Image (cartoon, rainbow, N blue to C red; front, side, top):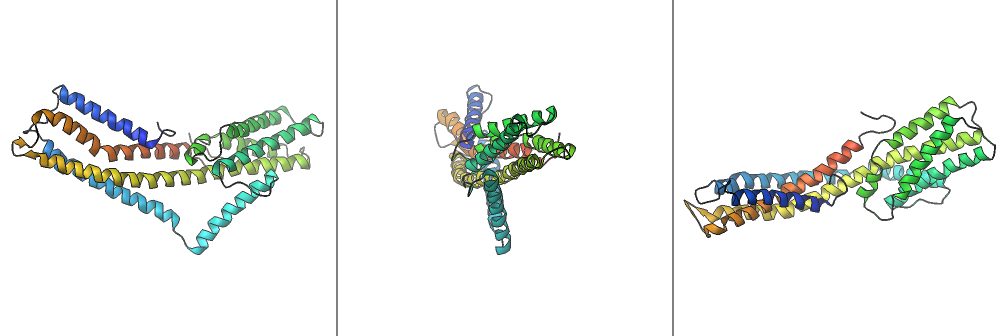
Length: 302
């Protein structure tokens, strides 16, 4: 519900829950929606103002998303160069002429290359070219398993949010620190070929750290863009619904049969709260992803 669930389904579930609770309270006699109740003022002032506020927030979200797209020629060129440099570096370590553009395939290439590099060190150990301490072999086993686990969870052309879910947690930072520790501790006893493999593994782990933050940026931008569009759609419908329900009420009278008021008001509250539940569902994912990916590099907050 917090990360992987479809945001529209999560919002629909919250809306149905709110509608069900209000309906149960109305039919149980706890709430009143008659001609002398405060329903008209609720819809005419509170809920209408709330809907307008949410629509205003969606405009601010749009400005935030658009601001990430704008830039000078120099800044855009720097972004392009940095992205190309990362692709070329991973392709070189993987021994390929180029790396894929698909986010899932690119991360899969990093994970596979990481596993291959660890396997190379194991082969060097088995062939007798290198006799590492048990601490080194244990760390390499964990790193190889980490790359294997990432690759096993990936499929081509899946959503960036799904790719990002695989990278949540601090395993990359733990493994990055382990590699740096082993390099510094056993630097004098490591053959040149082994040092080169360790350097490649460290670079691949750093690439995972960069990719994780970059994919987070893409995922949140996509979510915020979709959220602003959905709030505009549902906000317009909610605004009209609030006006209609307000005009149904007159001074000590209503323009529809009193027996239908519980159904009409219940459905009206469900429609009016739809923009808010959409906002809540998207913000829940954004906040959860931000909290789970707050660490950058070897620093891991408690």
